[in-house]
Length: 177
Image (cartoon, rainbow, N blue to C red; front, side, top):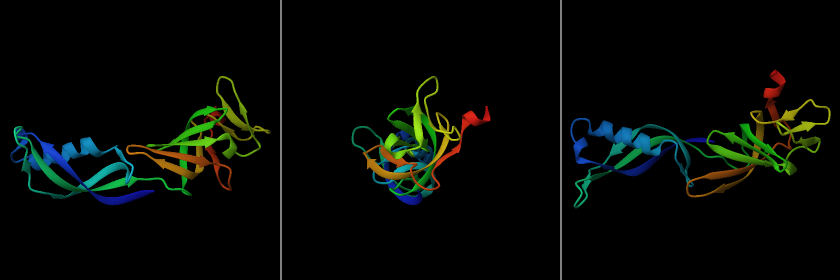
């Protein structure tokens, strides 16, 4: 799920950047350092929407660098248990498959895949129904449900299922060929 939140960060700036473009330099440095990162508490920072406030700088002894407290508004992505997401399959093996939904990697175990689907190894490993109508392989788009998350300091891992109503393959790249 996506959220708009306000976060704070201390930014260090070299004295050569002091001048009329100080705020611009702080903003560009903030975007470069923060966008695309993950904090376990808030989730993945997708985009910085704007700067709320830049506090007074504090000069660091001996270096000349100045530390500015910066409050900024951003969009974060954090998956929750029970959430339905659409994902792209990145790898298929006999244990299940991995899929990515934005920056989050989700593992779907073979126990959480419908019983009528069998694993087939070969050039393109896949899960296929007995009648061949549905196939999960690399680059397939699937709709899945998050049943568990594990949060580290810098990463979020998820376990998903497609063994529920209205879940499963959305589009199959093999069907177009």
